[in-house]
Length: 338
Image 1 (cartoon, helix red, strand yellow):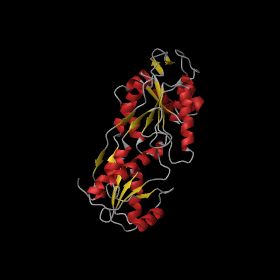
Image 2 (tube, rainbow, N blue to C red; image 1 turned 180 degrees about the horizontal axis):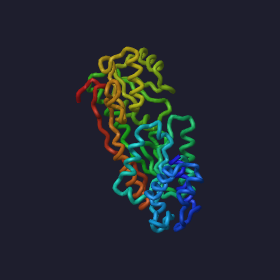
Image 3 (cartoon, rainbow, N blue to C red; image 1 turned 30 degrees about the horizontal axis):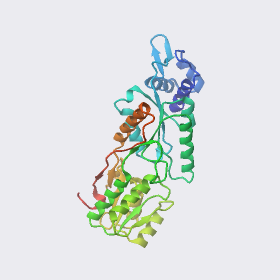
Image 4 (cartoon, rainbow, N blue to C red; image 1 turned 120 degrees about the horizontal axis):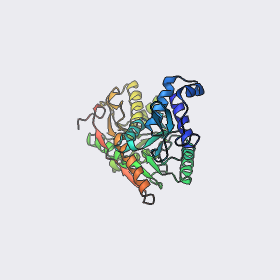
C-alpha cells in the first residue's frame, strides 16, 4: 500500500496534476483518498520529500517543490527483480553512490510510465527466460528512445550475444567469468566438465558459455541447456553424460543442481565438483558452500550512476561497455583450497 500511494503521488507531481509551489493535500485528506492509515501515508510523504519532490514547512503544510529546486529523477526498470538476486544490491549501489543524494529515484513497472513522467534517465535490466522477452525489450527501448530518455543497461544487453546495442552497459565480463570458473576446475583435475544453464537465459549465459568453451581448449564440451531445470532432467543428463564437474550459468542453477545431485546420492565435491557465477548472499549457505565467481553488485550500481551522468553530459559520445572486475571465491563445492 505504501508503495502504491508513493508512486501514485509521484506520478501526479511529475505529470503536473500538482504544480510547483502548490500546497499538497493534507495527511488526513490522503488517508481518506487512499483508504489507508496515517502511518502509511506519512511514510509515503517522507519518501516524496527524500526524493526532492515536496518540501514540508513547519506550521504551514507540504508543498510541491519548485522546478529550480527539484532534483533530477531517474527510473529503475527491472522486470525480473524478484527472480534474479543480483539486482537488489545493484540498486542499493546506485542509490548509495556518492553523487546519488543529488537525485531522486523512482521504482516503476513500465517504460510508458517513465515516458509520461519525463524522467531524466532509466536504468534498465532487460527481460530474460521468456519467449516474448526479446520483442518486449525492443518495445521498451523504442519507447525510451522515442522520448529521448537516456538508458543505462544493468548486467546484460537485450541484443543476442555477441551483438551489442546503442546504449551503455554496466556489468562484469561474462566471457571471463565463464573462463575462470572452468579454468579453475581444469586445474583442480576435472576432466569431464559440463555447462548447465537455462535454454532461454539472458545473453550473459551465452557469453559465459563461450568462456567455458575457450577454457576447455581441445577438450570436448558437455553442454546441457534444458527448457526447465528440474531434478529429473538433471539426473537424466548426469547418468547419460557422467560429468565429474559442472560450471553453472548462475548460483541459482548451481543450487538446483546441488539439490538434485545430493538427492541422487552424489557426493559434492567427492563425486562431482560445482562452480557457480554471481556469489549471491546464500551461496555460502548452501548444503555445500558454493565456489563461485563474484559479481561486485554494489560497485556495478555505483558505476551505473556514473555512466548515466556521463551520458547526460555527453549525449553524443559512443556507447560503452563498463566491465567491473570479477573474481573467483573458492569454497567447498569445488574440492580445492585455491
